[in-house]
Length: 604
Image 1 (cartoon, rainbow, N blue to C red):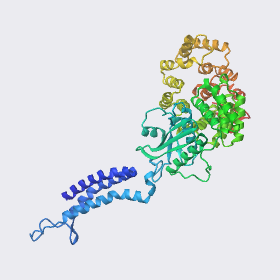
Image 2 (spheres, helix red, strand yellow):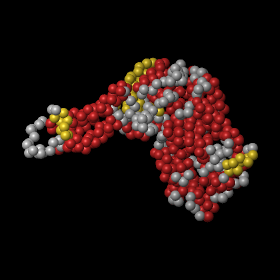
Image 3 (cartoon, one colour):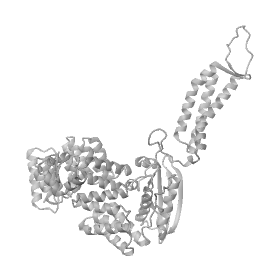
C-alpha cells in the first residue's frame, strides 16, 4: 500500500509538471487544470483503499491474502505490486489528460476562443470583447496624430455596431494613450478580454495601417496584419481590419447587419482629413480652438457638401462650443437637420439638438431628441450620458442613474459620467462611493472634480477640507466679483460651516455680485439662498435667466440642497416657467412630485 501511495504521489507530480505548460501552449481553459488537480487529490484515498484490499495477479484481481496463511505456508513471491503500481500510474495519466483531450477535439476552435470568465451561471460564456487603443503615429513628421486617432476611432465605432461584441468606449480606451500600462491591467480596467493595438504611417497620399489583436490574459498575439493603400482607400482599409477582427473573435455578423461595417463617409480625402482634425479639437474640448475646428469643417463641406458626418460633427461643435469662440445655435440646428436628411441613421445630429435644447431650458425638446439618438445608437456611452443628464435635470433620478450606469458599463472611465454618478451617490448618503467616483474623475483630468469632493467633505462635517478644495476652481465662476481673492473665501466660509455672522458676510458678497448684473446668473449665488432658508429668492433668481452652469443647478435642485426649494409654494410656477411641467405632462411626474392638474405639480 505504501509503495502504491508513493507511486501515486510521484506520478501526480510528474503529470502536473507536464500538463500545465501543455495547457497554456494549447490555450485550454483554466478549468481543465483545476479538474486535474482535483482528480489527482481524490485519487490518494482511493489508491490507499484499493491497494489495501486488492492485489493484481496474473490470474486477475484478487483480494489481498493475509501475510501468513492459516496453514503457516508462506505465499510464493509475486510481481503483482509492481504491476499494480504501473497500472495506477497509467490510470493517472489517462484521467489527467481526459479534460484537455475532450476539450481540444470536441471543439476544434478552442485555440482562438475568447479568454473570458463566464458572465452568468454554469455553462454560460461571456460575449467576446475588445478595447481599441489609440493607434501610434509613425509618420515621418510625427504630425499625423489626429489621423491615427481618427483611424482607430472609426474602427472602434464599426466594431461597436456589431451585435454580440462588447467594445470598450472611446474615452476609456484612449485614456491609456501614451501610458506604459500592462495590457492585462488595461483589459481588467476596461472589462475586456482582447486589446487591439496599431499604428498608422501616412506619407503624402500613401498610408500604411498595422493592427494586431492581442489576448490580454497571456499576451498571445491572436492576429496581426499590415495594410497599404492610398488615402482614397482609407475606408476600405478600415473595413478590412474591422471584419478581420470580428472573424478572429468568432463574431458572426447577423442578417440585420449592414453590408459594410465602415461606411464610406466621403469620397474626398482632404475633406476627411479636415474632419479628423476638427474631431481632435472636439474630443479634447479645446474651447479656444473651436472656431478653428468650425473653419476646418466648413472647408470640408465646401469640398463635399453631402458629407453627412461632417455636418453632424459641425452641429455638435456649435452645440458644445461657446458663442465667443464662434459657435451659433442657428448653425447647430441647420447642420444637424442637413446631416439627418443625408443619413437618417446618424445619432450625432440628434445629440447636438438635444444638448442645444437643454442649454436653452427646452427640456421636452431635449428629451425627445436624446431619446431619438439613443434609439439609433443604444450602445454609445456619450449618448447614454447625455440622456442621463437630461433625465436627472428634469427630476427622473432613478431613470437617470440607470442611464449613467449603462454609460459607465460601456466606458468605465468616462469622467463626466463618474462625476454625475458621484453626486447621486452623495445625495443618497453613500459618501464613500461618491468619493471613489470623484477621485477617479479627478485622476482622469476632470478639472471640476474637486467640487464633488468638497460636497463629500461637507456631508462628513469636514468644513475646513471643503473650503480648501474650492478656491481655485471657483475663480472662473465669479467674474462679477471685484476682488475674488478676498470675496471667495468669504463666500466659502459662509457656505461651509460658518456661523450667522459668516453667512451674513457671504450674503453681502452674493448681493454685490448680483448688483453687477452678470450675463448669466451665478449658480453659487442661487445655492446660497437655497442653503440658508430663502428658497423663494433662489427660485426667482434661477427663473430670471439662464445660470452659468445649468446642469449643476438642476442636478442640485433634485438633491438634498434643493429640498427647501421643491417644497416652496413658488415651485409649481417655477416648473411651469422653466418648461419642466411640459416634460412631466408628457412623461409622467418625476420621482419627487405628484400631479394635481395640467402643468400643476406638488413636489417634496
